[in-house]
Length: 563
Image (cartoon, rainbow, N blue to C red):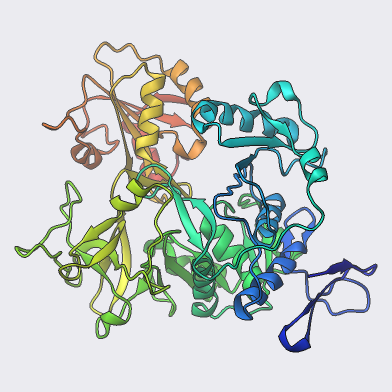
């Protein structure tokens, strides 16, 4: 598959199709051509035209049955770094290239070939993270660095990649056949039901997720999509960049959302609106209509889904507040349903015959999807960890002998079949657009506090999206140094995972099986009138915890105090 840069800024791709016909694709950006923008833009940086190469390769091999050339089974490439150009470049190259090695390879510095990049600030952090798990990797894992790097600052045994590349044969052997159900890559989940897990993404899932959004929300190939979500999650990568790779849309990539730069970017890159659609999930029903009216956004493309799930939903007809729809008349067409769960334990409630109980309209229940492995829409590929996969599968859900995927989320369905998100089960809450694993935060806080009992949970704050983190800490002797604790917390956790509220109490109540009791503490929240223990608030301007009194509590409720 040859490609060539022309002097006027075009990228011309030509490929021989079966039967001798010729396919010719072109992105236009030079003089004398139409004003259609290149397929992917990096906001504030260079254009990404390589994505078009990957798009053509992907589609030709997928639709026309041309040989698949991709990473062999057993070869894993771990990308350690942020998103943007480098992330997509590695993805595009590994999808279309045959890498013949006999060992697993951890490429710690494969994206650091440009000395002007942020090597100085990013590499020490990345290598320190690798050192923590280096001893548990085993001898089968080899590590390589590329570009400028200091052997003294990387884990022991790291080799230089360039000599191996120079010694490799110029004409690698032909790759084995690959198909629609073969693995494309792994995406670490954001931790919806606990610790992040490596979810398996096969080619059919990538196509299905991107196509569902494109056709369901009636996108157009001449749209310009502004993508400010992390590319290491499926929303920013598959739902966002996938529109370019599969459907030829232009995608503008910004590493993180900036409210001050948003409209400047939309004008600069000719983004659609000009914004005619807001695509994503989590828009609260209470501000839905106000948002669309104030900013004249005709459509809110709200959807529900997870990287690995088989029960994705979409609100395709702009129903206010809904995250999706499933027919009550023909439920067998898309076998998903809400089933009753115990409010305290979130365990599935079953009938005497052992089958789960479906919810009636208006009743909250956990969303489940029936697993049918030979159906691309219903299959569940799970995670790399088999134990993690088994925890997400329930038996005898729709009927005896079947299996279903457990979403871990509680939804409510109305009498017409529209679904509304209610809450997240398990040990997770969502804050600042990220899923926060209470298990992970509890472990970090406990280590900082010398293995003190810690309980972490999310509490609702009026006017705020998601739930703010709150930590209940056992402090029987009033000996917790909050200043020292705050400094250590800054180094240990990202901003979205740091508890906004602290509750210091004599001891943390446990069940008979030594599990922490969170339900009552969630109900009490951070209200000083309902809690007799000492409460603290993470004051953002000062960056430290301050006592939470009645006045501060009222300021938080009214929105005067920023979070």
